Length: 450
Image (cartoon, rainbow, N blue to C red):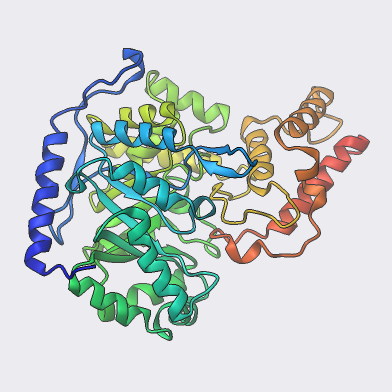
């Protein structure tokens, strides 16, 4: 790869901004039912570091549609990816976030294939050094260089140290300093192959303080955090941090913020009935998810908000929030925070369906087991005791829906507690403990002993 000097950087950034500006004139219609397409002008934020004009809606490339090939192997549906990327770029989306670790290592290649069909100046690539399992210099550099090939690019617009925080500075140093990778990446940034360098964070407040203190040494260009109206003030404080604290720290340092999990793994798209009712009373024509997006986008330090959109209807619904974006008023912000307070009383499992815990060596579908449980908690359809008036119906529905959602061989009773999943969970969920708890609950339902 050739070196790219700072002057070339500015030329590229300018070209990208011009291309993005052209896209911002308005989303054109594509083929398909007219009423299914969102229309309007994309909301953009300017990166103060280099003038990048970044779409407020960013595409998270960790949830592309998977299909089976002729040998029964899970592969990404490339036709679906191409269609979604085409529609997203047409609508003005220009930030695409991926990783060598996503979708069994297939996301970068699929994303690169789809994006390379468009002018390079019309989109920004964000990827990561995801050296969780092997942080040796050889493996780390190979991952870095492989990403260029997979993404079909000569430079990365945004490059991240992936999922740092857990284990504090000691863990960070092992993955990035002791192996010489930070020195290497700083030179890559200077050479132009990395235009902006930052990190994605998962961890506790003391761990965040350690990571942000490294700004003096490494001059982070941006930081990616989990931010949504539930985590704003209702994070557990141990496994993750209240987003208001993270935001304030980064805002004071004038660091652009990339947001992940604005819908908390989809949980804020389907909320308890009483909360849904209050959202719909205010905005009958808006989706519940739109409130979550508008909450995050109402904060000016946010550069882009990532959403992993698997299907066309997800993309179209999300575009409705960002084409002609309307930030929440102060009263509306408080209303959403009040709804979060109500939802905080629901005993759900803090799973974002990121699939980092997969595949389970024993075939257990961990994310779907948790999602099934959370749906019933949010819907108020959990059978709690035989004293409930509709206990028999709730009991039967839970058992039937559980068997329908999760094949027998992939259910919670097959967990042996090996703990292999624990190190991969960015939310630090005690996965075996929660699986055993759900399994005990199901056994009680089956035996009618609640």
